[in-house]
Amino acid sequence: MLRATGAVVIEADGTRYAIYTTDGREVAAGTATGRTEVTLPRGIYVARTATATHRIAVR
Image (cartoon, rainbow, N blue to C red; front, side):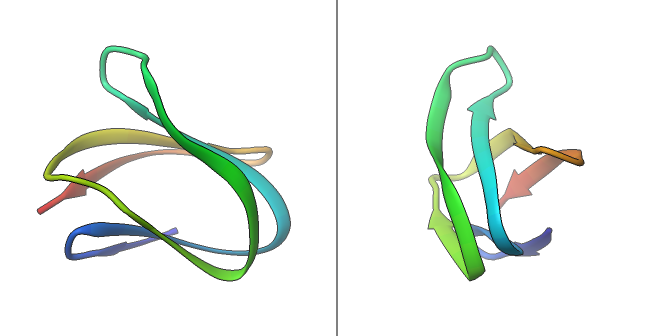
């Protein structure tokens, strides 16, 4: 996963993902196909895939 201004970018092929706020509320979910960009408001998020979990800062 990469960090981009105003978005979370997930680079994977056919991998399910979910993005949560720090208090556990799901804000986005889907299947990443190639380069998938999810636009989010400024904040701290937790991004999960089948193989990894990352804390993400969106500025």
